[in-house]
Length: 248
Image (cartoon, rainbow, N blue to C red):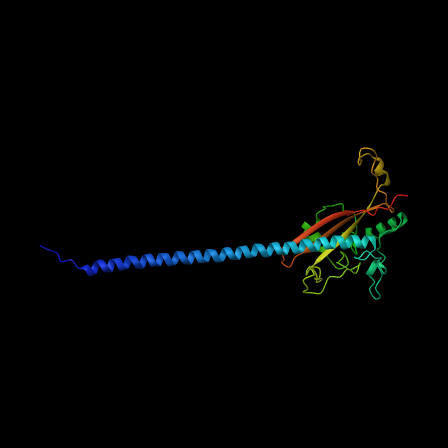
């Protein structure tokens, strides 16, 4: 007995297989498009984070330099610091917290800083030498005290350094931020220097001991912290600064 064969049933099966293949291809295309979109977004996030870190790093460098100008009592162009009328912070003329000019001034400054127990022995950007954890910027409780008002120093606060107009390509927006908890700060630790250290033999160029020729006998350690435009960005830099005088 012959069974009749219908060609139409074979065509229907082929059309069903084609539809399945098309659906699979469409799904694969969608997955590839989604993967490409997420990769692009991830790369954009990396670039944005890196740019914010570089901006914060440059702000911290500027704060370190501004602290050195503060110690030297000069303006950013190297000229002597001149007080601005109505601004008691400029050149520290209206502040009892000033850098010592002679060894006899050092004891008074250290005594004043010793009283700042609630602010980690710091005020107006000047601090006693830290005795606890040196990386205080990694401890939120300590850092919150250090960035409180009148504890750390802001960029240009005492030197008059210009920050540039807000939005200007020549300005760093982080240095323009002065709201609580934002922007950047610097602190200068006052570290008395033993004038006999130069005779210890620990520092030598092979022919003679290398003592520091300074007056007063003080070494300064500068710490700068800058927070980026993103909450997760923070940069901390440190440097040591010594004002040496020319030998007679």
